[in-house]
Length: 232
Figure 1 (tube, rainbow, N blue to C red):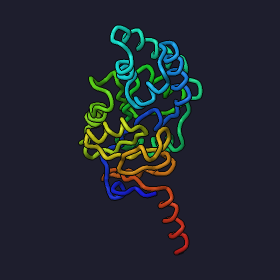
Figure 2 (cartoon, one colour; figure 1 turned 90 degrees about the vertical axis):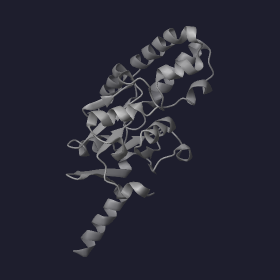
Figure 3 (cartoon, rainbow, N blue to C red; figure 1 turned 90 degrees about the horizontal axis):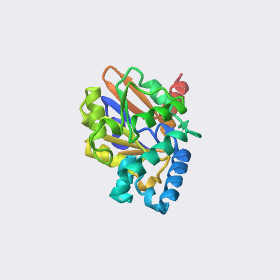
Figure 4 (tube, rainbow, N blue to C red; figure 1 turned 180 degrees about the horizontal axis):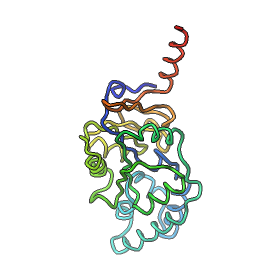
């Protein structure tokens, strides 16, 4: 495992996806969408390929136009009422804590109510900047969510590192001009296209200072520590 081009970069900000990156909501999401699919007579594979995009986009892609409003209301209701098993993913708490005094944000395909509900269910302390699908005209894979997060942070998106778990989210990040770091939490490694790929956030550490933010592998930090101790 290595960070490739990310190892030598100094970032102005880090922008995280929410579901599958900071929190694990997969069981709840799967239950909600499975119920929705059964109610509307859809095959399970109809929705899977839309992972990482807003619910409204999924509904528009798989349902006839005259059912869009009702179908969207129903999946919203199902997702908001099923928050069981929503937990923080490994390394997420530490990652956000390390960036408490640096520029960071969440850019999610959730609506405001759903994002707040899942963040609360996971007992996650989020950054002050939260961009949801309600804040943009175009959701992922369009770059607007990440461009809006960068705008709110007051930074150049080309100097931002985006952390994502979904191919569509990574596509949006690249289109925004951001650097990309993928976590293998919901998608197989071979299906992820990013500047670097790690298992989850516990594999890395963010090191902010007055110049910017660096990202380092935990194994490298441990190795450097052992070397320093051996030199004493």
